[in-house]
Length: 164
Image (cartoon, rainbow, N blue to C red; front, side, top):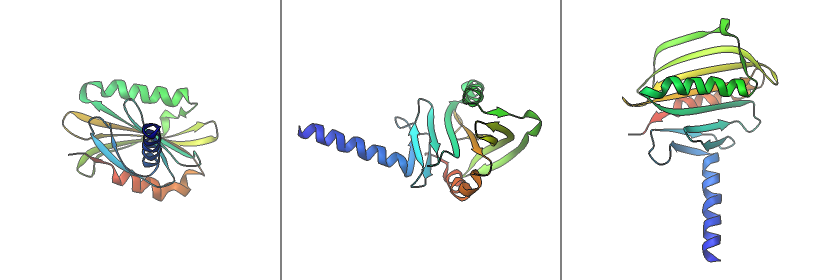
């Protein structure tokens, strides 16, 4: 019985930790870390992490890809958006290349589009966490609601860094 209680307490603590604070991912061999606001929910996936605001106005995920699998990860991210009812307006594409984020080279792609709630902002970024690993960030947020999370989102993205 004591072991069961200890296991349950550990499970509760690990779930709570995923809701706030620094997350290193993937947990078995961390490539990067990000700090989540207390009210946001983060969960590890097979390929990285997924994060959402408490009101579901913003959703993003970060996949770790090796240099050889980057195209497949990007294709999967776009399919995920489509499978979740997000439509991208290709004519609205804005690119920002040759940027730096915490020592990582990063490029941003942004689009307008729609989701089940109406107009949406969609974004993708590719960051070089190391010579072998890239981070593919995929984002979508409901226009009108996402603005109230702009500071939190900016702080989270600014906290993204490679694990040395």
